[in-house]
Length: 117
Image (cartoon, rainbow, N blue to C red):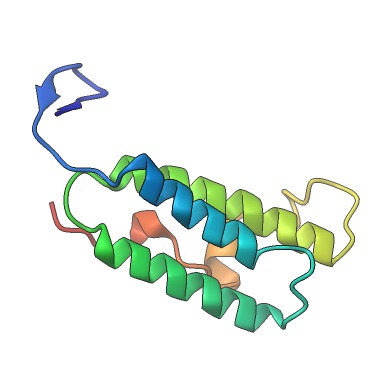
């Protein structure tokens, strides 16, 4: 049983478990470590493979809010990874904006992927 965040009314639905979300976050963190010295294209390809696989497995039910939260997590980790790799002293929000990470670099946005309700 889930609760609507707009009205507070309970409804029947399905979402990924907290354990499944935490497992994906751990895999993302292990991919985007500063010790990863592979070319950025290979890192993004490996990350996209994990994200697409997870999104395809959990494509049913009420997943939009969870996908948006995971998008934010992926963006923060990717920005931190790029900042460490390029030895940038700032937080890197201007240099690596969301549009740059999800657009120009080609990281998959989970919220933009198709889903089945």
